Every structure is written in structure tokens, then in C-alpha cells.
Image (cartoon, rainbow, N blue to C red; front, side, top):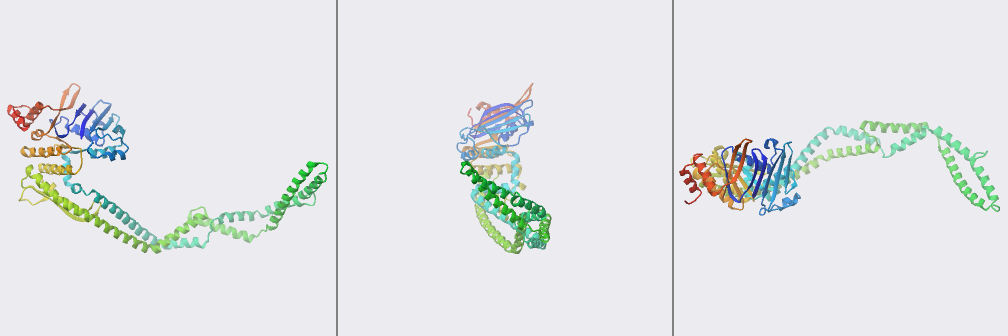
Length: 554
């Protein structure tokens, strides 16, 4: 429940610092006193978008802060999931606005995005304003009322998961059909491309090998000349490297007895001679193997030209990518050949999934039908005391094509008297009747959903007298069942039944108009309700009437 509200520099409010009580509270005040401003501030705490124009003129910063007691509402999981400290006895929600247009939100002093604030706000406070009566025009609202009172959350989640799977598979099937149609049109072209690449008999790595071979054959004369020069240097008859090295090694061996170090040097030269002789033999072998064949060079270059042309045509730069493209073309052709089989498989899967959705939708329909009959009885019981003795209320549920919320179309039917056939409530109910229908629905919903605070903003529009008193009794009963109910009202019959009474008023000062709010004492309540009964000129009769409404003995 809302325990405390602090507002600073918002619209006409300089500063508001007030406690709220449990049970049924009422807020009264003249039109324009600032009741809607307070609701606007609460709306910001519930995640509504901010407008810097809402700040009090001349202020640099606006602060709105509320303290909630959530100890009975099982919200610990929400705080744990969002890594926010859980303080059930004193949960603090704060919103700050600056003149520059910046907005910040905090939950228990932890910065929070607006989406998170809104998610929490929906679990803390339900503000029912007059425009919400228009929800009765909307089929999804009527369906959600039935679902809430059917307590079918798990079954609805199961159905929606199955329906999502069904939709995903349906899209996959449509995509495959489109792909097959497109592929069938391109089949001949794909077959031509695959045939061209397949006929080339490409091998990964052959391009590099061919390029090296072509380069070698193109420069064969230069290679042979270099190899011949190297061979001559090794084995030339006049001062060849090997002959000279052999002579030098023999000379060192000849002085080993008189110069012991010469033996080591000679041994090293023996090793060098062996290595160089091996190199010389390899050079000679390479020289003999170099044989320039113009026809072979032409064949190599022709093969490379074919590879280059294919790469240019298919806009790739390696044989590996050409092979990958060839494989992709093969897969597409296989897909075309096997498409009917894949299509039949998906169609069969879709049929199975639809049957599963239908099964789960039927479960939902049964739960909704059962809840609808209960709602009809409850609405009849609640509406009759609210000044509609001949009221009839029914819920028509018809089946349509499967959709996100099942197969059921829900329509609330209404008639205020026995002579008029029931029709959709939004078409035949007056403003006052719609207000009573909505109040009754809210009372039922509040019994099914643990919502800490409900605020009714002039839900009493179009009613008066005994009906207003009955509506107040209903709100008071809602406030007695572990929740806080606050009603903003202009009717003395409703104001008198509040366990706590607040008044919103405004002052005209030299600095401008400011709005205030205060909790009324018992004596102040008598005066306020008397004024609501008779206007600014409060008579003794009005005071006495106010006392009677408040059940105060003289």
C-alpha cells in the first residue's frame, strides 16, 4: 500500500508531504484545486513519460517520491531478478525531473529505467480514471477480465508457447514454398552453373601449383644459365671449388703430426667438402631436369586462364571459393529435387502443431466458459444493489480462428431492464451504468489479483444518492480486504464512507496559485461534507445532514 507521498515543484504544488492510511480513503476538493495534478505525479512514479512543462515554473528540479509497504504482496522475486534491494516494509520509488528535460528514476535508491519503473508500477497501483471506462469497448480488455478471474495464467502461457511454435513453423513453410518457387524458376540456370564448375574439375591448391610451374617454365633459360654457372663454379677443371677444397684439406692433413690443431681444421673442411659435393650434385641434377617444353607451358597457361575466367565470372578470388560455390549449387539443386519431400514434412509438422494448439485452446475455452458463468452471477449480485434491480449481464463467448490469445471472442452483454434485449455494454449502457459495471468488475478483479493500491478517479460520474452510497460501500469492502482503495469524488455520500478523508485545495498568493492537500479531522470532515451538500453557504441543515452521513451523534 501507499504509505507516504512527497512532491516538490510539480505543476501548482510547491511541496506536498503527506501520509496515507490503509483501508478506504477519499479525496475531495473543488474542480481545479489540484486533484488531477496529484494523480499526474503518481502517474510519473508509475512510469509515465515526463514533460518538463509539468514542473513548477521557475524551479530547477522536481522530485516525486512515494513509500510503499509491500510486505504482504510477494514481490521479492521481482526485486531479486532486477538486482534491487528488497525492503518490503518501506519500498521507495522516486522520480526526478530537471528544467533541462532530463528524467531519472530510482527504486530503493537504485537507478532504474522507465520500463522497469512501469513494470513495478503496474504491480503497485491501479489508477482507474473516467477514460478507462472506454475499455469496455475493447474486446481484449473483456477477454483479460475473464482470464484473470479464470486464473488460467499457466494454461494461457502453455497455449501461447505452442502457438508461437506453430507460427514459427508456418513462416518456415511459407519461406520454403517461396524459395522452392524461386529455385524452380532458376533451376536451369543453376544446373548450367554447376555443370560449368563441375566440368572444370577444380582441385583445391592447384592454382598456386600451376602459377609456380608457369613462372618456372617462363624463366627456364635464366634458370639453366644460373645453374650452369653454379655447376661450373663447383666442378670446373680450372680452380673448381671442390678441387681447390680437396687440395687444401689434403695439405692440412699433411701437417697434422707437426701441428695438432690442423687435424681439427682438416676435419671441418672434410665435412664442408661432403656438404658442398652434395650441393654440387643437386645443382647438376636440377640442370639436367630443366627442359623447356612450349606445349606444356601453353597447357599450363590455358588451365590458369580457365581458372581466372571462372573466378572473374563468379566474383571470387580462389579455387577454394569456386569449389564452395559448386557445393552450394549442388545443395540447391538437391533441395529442388527433394523439395516436395521437405515440404510434405513441414506441412505434416504444421498439422500436428495446429492440433496441439487446438487442444490447448479448447482447454482455455472451457476455463473461460466456466469463469464467464461465475462472473455473470457475481455481476448480477453486485449490480442490483447499485440501483439496477432489473439488470441483466451476460458474457457471450464465440469461437474464431486461432490467434495469440486462443480461439475465443468475448463480448459483455448488458441490459438495465427486462424489456430491452441485451446488447454489448458499451453500446447501450449510460455513463453512470458503465461506471457501476466497471466498479463491480474492478471489485471482482481485486479479489483475484494481489494489487496493493487502487485509485478511483471520479468513478461516481453519473450517479448520486443511494446508488453513490452503495458504490462507496463496495469500495469500502474492497479496502477491507488487504488492499488500499482511494476514491477521488465529488459526492458527499461516497466521501462520508471513507475511513480517511483528504482534501485538496489551492491558495492564491502574490507569488501565484499553489495546490495543497491535507488529512481532515473529524470536525473538518463535517464541514467539508456539509459544503459538498450545500455549496459555499453552509447551512445548519447541511451540517446536520453531514453528521448523519458520517454517523456522528449530536
